[in-house]
Length: 346
Ligand code: DGY
Image 1: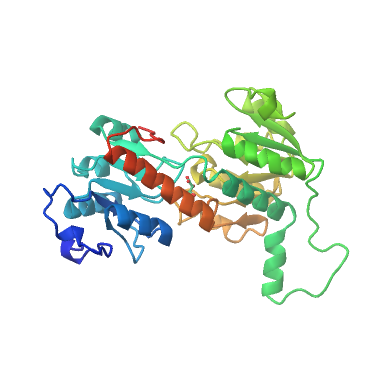
Image 2 (image 1 turned 90 degrees about the vertical axis):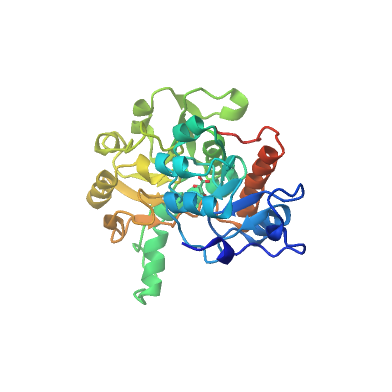
């Protein structure tokens, strides 16, 4: 564990780190658990005594709590891969008032433990909607058109030239896309898929008003929607209830040769069932950006030619990651100023 003196406090002209904690001008201490985009770190360092992680080391939840105690953190900016379970939340020093996650998903945080401790937790909704929807369409097209097989063929110098039957995929126009979870991202995926000529079916707790539904067909029961999904795209949060929601039985309700897209969380699918279905051709292909136990995904995916795999890139654009960071900082600013956090989850 790094000692406080060794921790890389951001360069500040008037060395706020050296001020006594009781100084009225002392800026609050903000612990950033991972390296963040330059613009975000610059703002964090301007407004806080920011403790950065320039080597981008991944810390366990307990280590994050210990670092927060060591540096006297008032706020922690954490990320999707940080496992902040009940033990880690309990170990956070009492001085930490806000835990702002650089993600819309909060499944890595024990929200009940945070609530019980009176810790404010915030997330970053809205700003990653378009980037995530773009990745869902990349996965959809890549899985339908066998992009990863083609790319690997070229890289392996195995392409012998154009042939009429080579790597024939599935045309997406005219196909039915079933979206489970028609929130912001689900709606953005629907808008893009309409441009490709797909018919939209969706399941959502509440039916959308016509101006948002835009002709999409609502199914109150997700089970009843599965048989019409030529492509199934998942957009619901990971919870204890949704763990392994897409299992062998539900895959069996999809049309033979359906395509699966997952940009939500890996744990909402049962990997063994998906891998078996991909091997058997019951699922034609899958486009997956998220995995259970990232980055240690189920090894069965690696050798499957019909799995188009990305390393959790949903929000990975400079613009989006900056916007996520600024949103996290807006939330921290609000809590530190005694205002309500705009994106308070707990
Ligand atoms: C999120 O925000 O939850 C994403 O998965 C991280 O990009």
